[in-house]
Structures are given as structure tokens and as C-alpha cells.
Length: 495
Image (cartoon, rainbow, N blue to C red; front, top):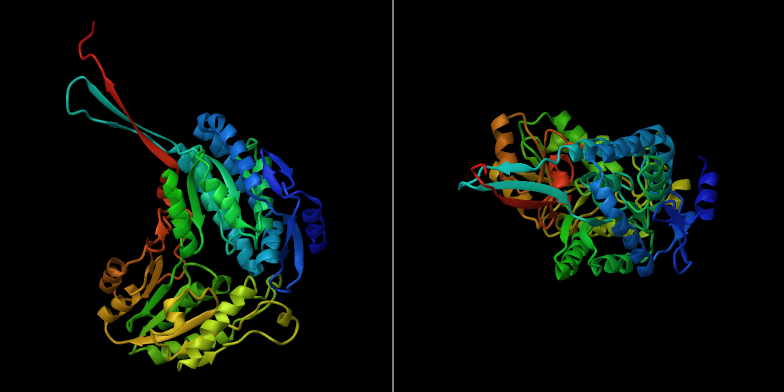
């Protein structure tokens, strides 16, 4: 689909998907969606409000009884069909994703495949959501354990993975028998809209999944948090917002799954394969222009190889191709919006003002056509200290601070000195050291000689203020199931 065709389609369609139909917002208002590579408006979409949010819950609540009683195999057939349609339309979906988010098109295609894999995986997990029979302690007793869907789920997704964060939440919810109301990020509603068409075409009944686009996320979230029919909130985003949702969910003791901020350390020991460590750190740090919650934010390198690592890493960073995500050659795209660019700039300026040395990058792109967008050069900093903002806050951009260390215990202590605990990365050729690191680092995900450890069949989630619960793998569906005991008294002797 061309840019013009996409623009025409979005602006002539209604943007809320409720009870199997596209509709306009109650207010009739719309808001713009921008292309981060150009700063230009891609589309205007419906600006939903609290009334629209309640209407979505009406539909999901009404659809829940029939959907929850449908055999898991039947639900799985629809999820697999939705995945097949995603693979079939991968290029079109990727282009939509890149237009609204800026991600390099090759990465966008990878995200569509990654997103589809959650539908495939959880189609099977729904079929394997087994109960239990527990041996009794006394005669005349039987204990059965049933697993049943939680109910209506409110899913709130971020802008950095507009497809994968939708399917990673929606797939296990639907597979478990829940119905869903979904609010995508205001920066990236178009990909979610395209997915609604796919779910409908795959046969998912009206009301089972509903979409509310909005430029006022607080109003929609508050409507769902105050509605007793919504029994679970699943959210990916900042720790600050996650804490707020958790507080408000407590009023009705709603179940919550929270995938929040990260500040991922990388530890490169002096026995590491330096080339492998550079490749793995590059993959973690600069994927999606550094806009991932698991990307490398603090790179600790043992002094014995620090200079060699810094030289090779900096050379690799300087060779990265910055460009419009729609270009097949682009390796680093724009930041998502002006606010993101300002934050990255502030972190780098603070570090340099406090004595850090720029080894590469360090500024916004101000030359040529890229000056229209929100591009920041891939950056490497040396001489970084713990009192700098970049060492205490999640940068969410293409900036890599390098920090030397001496001893193994020091690396663990400094890596764990954070309120966050989502992902950490370790590079070593010593298996004992690798196991020690995996056990001692206070993080939910450890990449051991691996800069990209995530996949649909493994758990994703963090320790401490990085969240509650797990997404992905066999653990992911448990977040959407209630466990019910059936205690049965039986006559032991026939009558």
C-alpha cells in the first residue's frame, strides 16, 4: 500500500473497532499521527473518550460468556488463521508500522513475524491449559482444580513495538477465553487498527476484541479501571504510569500484569570473545534506535580488554547507517517524537557537561532531508560516572555509555544498583563465570553471550520496579487464568 493510499484509507475510515464494527468516537474528534522520519502527518484517527471506553467494555462483557465456553481448539484455529494473515501481509503491515513509528523496514518486517509467532504459540498453549486432580488426604474426598478465564481484559500497549506488544497480550488473553479491550499508544494506532481487520477476517466474533484509539489515555484507562466488569489490566510502559495503574487497580482488586521500565546493564568480562561481545552489544543497544525496554543502557567492560572493546565498538557504531526507516539500507531510524529526541539530547549534554568524552555521535542530525525528522546520531560515551543522568535513568535512545571495571564482584554490585531489573547481558567464555552471573544478577532476563534472547516461547518480565508477571512462554497464559478448586464429597461404598 502506498503512503497516499494508506493516508486516504485511514482518514476516510472510522477508527474505533467495537463489537465487530468500525465506528467514530462519541466526541467526533480526531488527532494526528506523525511520521517520525519527516515530521509530517500520516493520518488523523478517532479520539476516543471515557464513553467510548465503556462502550468497548459493554461489547467485551457481552461476548465473554460465549467466547469463554468455546473449545480452546476452536479459539486456536482463529489465532492461527490470524497469524497466517499476518505473514501473508507482512510487507504491508511493516510499512504501516514504519510510517507511524520510524523503525527501519527490515526490523519492522521482523517485528511482524515476531508478533505473529505469539498468536501461533498461544493457540497451542490455550489447548494445553490443563487442570489438575489432587490426591485426597481423607476417604470420601476428591479435589479437582479447574482453570478458567479471568474475564474482560484491558490491554494498554506502547509505541515501540506496535504489533508485537498487541499480540503478546491479546494472544494469551484470547487463547485463555478472555475478551479484550485494547488501547494502543497514541503515537502508533495504525498498526493496531490493521490487526483488528485481521482478527475479524480470521473469524474472531464481534465483541471479543475491541479497539479504542485516543489522544487522552488517562480518560480511557480511568474508565476501565473504575469498571467492575474489567477484571484484569495488562500494561507495558513506564514505571511511573505502571505504579499509577497498580494503585487504581487496587480499589477493585483487579489483577495486573505490568511490564515496565528497564536500565539494562551489559557486562563484558576480560575472557570474552571481543568480536562476539561487540556484535551482541550492538544488537541489543541499537535495535529500534535504542528504543526498547531491554536495550543495553550501561556497558561495563573489564579493564583488561576495555580499550580493545571500546575501539572496535566505536568503529562499529560509526559505520551504522542512519536513515528513513522506509529505506532498505537504514540501520538506525528516527526517535519516535520530539519529546524522545529532547530526552536523549538532555542525557548526552548532561554527561558531557560532567566530563564524559564523546567517542562517536552526540547530536541530532541537522543535515539534509533527515533534519526534518527526529534523528539522533548513534553515540558512544566514555568517562561516564554513576552520578550522570544516563546512568540513573532509562535513556531510550541510541546512546551507549562505556564504563570500565576491575573485579567480577564489582560488576555485579554496580549492575544491580538500580531500581530496575528487566534485562541484563553478560559476555564471557568461562561457563562457571557465566552461571554465577546469571544467578547473581537481579534481572528477569539474562542474555548470556546473546544480545537478543527474547522469543515467543520464553518468559518475558522483570524484577523490582520493572514489573509484575510474565509474558510469553507457558507462563504467559497463566496471567489470564483463574484457578478454581472443586472439592467433591463422594460415597466410598456403592449403594
